[in-house]
Image (cartoon, rainbow, N blue to C red; front, top):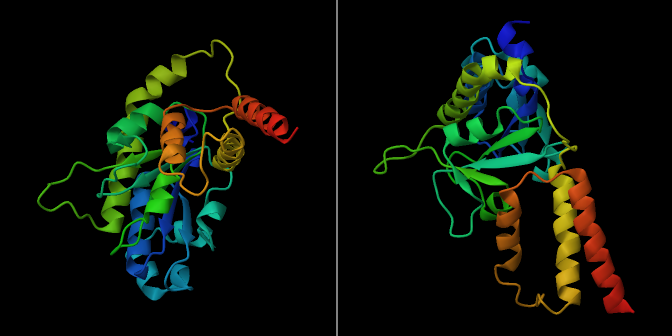
Length: 254
């Protein structure tokens, strides 16, 4: 193991998720882009071609990154792809009105390179991109500052940009990280599933208070998700909010 990898576990903490990918060649190219930067965790959500990981076009375009394809997993839902993940970033050229906080690839990498959390980068279908419900469920929206007149990147190109920025940030901070000592208390970061559970519990509590109308919820919950996306919730903090929500619900039922 070289000194760069020994200073941090970001190579094991960064997961690349491709949602409903259409072309096997793009999966192979994405695997190649990941491997050139030292990353290897690839998950496919409902790819259009079921045997995409063994498709001849994927293997050809992987060009030596066959080990990334062989270790990749195919899952049937976005929620399954997030298992064990604490921070989720959607990569999209299209901005949304009620999106999570927006970062450039470099900003995202710099903000999360030294954290201990498991990070997922989510990429959409080559033609349609990511659906709004997936973007809203993420903690951040990553927008690559491309030419505004033509901002469409190939899937593998987008993967390469994000992988490069994380590797670059690692190189620039590796010397600092090796000299940094841990000061103060730091709890275990909550996973995406634990945070989703907290939001569901909080939503029930707000309904119990008549603060949220379930027949016309409007944008309250997306705004609250956006607010919490600017933090790094720990398990204990999630449990505190769920405890508060439970007390509210119990009093409403009393």
